[in-house]
Length: 538
Image (cartoon, rainbow, N blue to C red; front, side, top):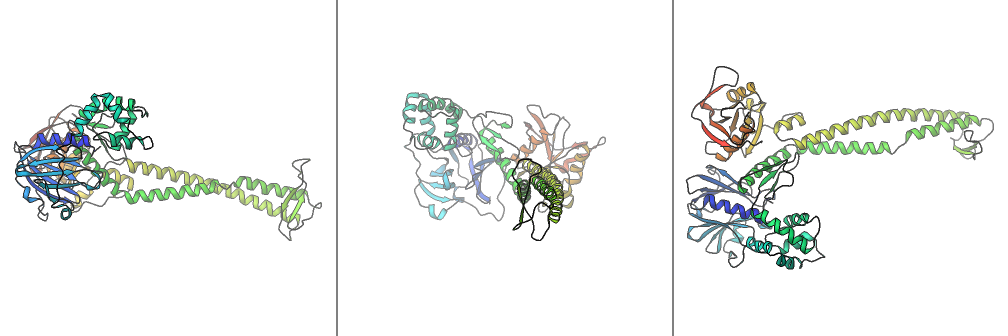
C-alpha cells in the first residue's frame, strides 16, 4: 500500500503540518531514481523528503537533519530554491502529492503507473522534471481543480449504502471482481479492491460489498500505519489494522511508518543481493540432488535381484530336462505347482548350468547395487536436509553477521573500512547509504567497540540510566537526526529498559567518551544529548 491513494493522502496531510510555512532549501539526487528535497520547517528544523520513482518497492521517506548534496551532485530545479511552502495537498483523483510554493510554483510528486516522477510546475505549465525533462517541459499540467476529491466521493458512498449498491451494481460480471471494483470506487486500486472482497468472505454481491465498504472507509479515514516483517520476506506496509499484529510494528504517523518501511526494504534488498550467488548455488545443488533421488527411486533393484535369483533356481532345477531354443528356454515353475512354464532368456552358447551361474552372479551384483543405492539415498537425504536448512537460514538472515554464519566466509568488506573494522564481531545494522550502526554484544565487546573500533567523530549511543549495549553510528554527523533517532531506538531495544514505553538514550561524539574505573564497558560521557524514544528492534 505504499503508493495507494489513501496512504499518499494521509502522507500529504502530515507533510503539510511539517513544512507549510517553511521553505524549500535545495533539491539533489545522489542515488538512481531517488530525489532528496531539503526543507526548513517553520520552527527552523531541517527535514529531508526522499522521493523514489520508477522502483515499485519504494515511494516516500523522511529524515530529520541537514544532508547537503555532494560536491559532484548537480543542482536540480534550482529555480524553486528558498521559496516559501504555502501548502501540501493531494490531487483530487490522481496519486499526486502537490507542494505549493510562493509565486505560482508547485512541486508535484507523481506516483502512478510508469510515469512516477517529480515535476516542477509554474502557473500551470511544467517547467522542469526529475525524469524526461526535455519531453515534459512546456506541457500543461492538469491540476483537476474541478474534480471532487476521491476521499470525499468515497465518504459520500460509505454514508449512503443505497447509492453505493447502485454504483457497485454496474460491475461487469465478465471481469475479475477486483478489476471492476477498482474502476468504480474512487481512489481504489486492485489491491484495495481485493481487500474489500476479502472482507465479504469472498462474496461479491453489491449489497455485501456496500456493507464492507462502509467499515473499510472509516479504517482508511483513521489509518493504523504499521510495517509487518516475516523472516526471508520483504517488509509489508499498510495503513489498515492488521488481522494478526504479531509481527507488525505500529507507528504514530504514516510518514514515520513509510520511513521505517523504506529502511527495512533497503536492508532486505541489500541482504538479498549479498547472498544471491550462494542462494542460486544452493538451489542448483538441491535440484541436482532431487533429480538423482528421483532416478534412484525409479529403479527397483530389490525386485530385479529377486527375479535373477529365481531364474537361477529355475534353470538349476531344469538341468537335463530342457534345451535352450533361439536365446530362451522354457522351464517348469517349481515354486508354483500347476502354474504354466516360465520362459527365461539365456545367452547363446551357454548351457543351463552356465546360464544359472550367470543369473546368480547378476543377482549378487544387484544386491550390491541395492546396498550402494541405499547408502547413496541416505547421503542425498542428508545433503538435501542440509541444503534446505541453509536456504531457510539464508532467507531468515537479518544482518551481515547472520549471513556470514550461513555462507561460512566473510562478506565483501565495506569500501574504506579499516582492517580492525572489517574483522570486528559486532551486530551491524545498515541505516542508510554509507551509514551503519554497530551494536556491542556484552561488556567486553562494548569496550572493544567503543575504544578499539570507534573513531573520534563517530556517534556513540547508550540507554541512559540502564545497562545495555554500547552503540556506535558510523558515516553520520550530528545533523543526521533521522539516523540518530533510529539508532537511539535500537540502543533502547538492546538495553535493560527495552520493555518501557519511552527510554532516554544519550548520544555524543565518541571523543567525548572516556573509560571509567571498574567493570569492562564502564564509561564517563561529556557533552551528551538525550532523546526520548520507543525501543524498536533493528
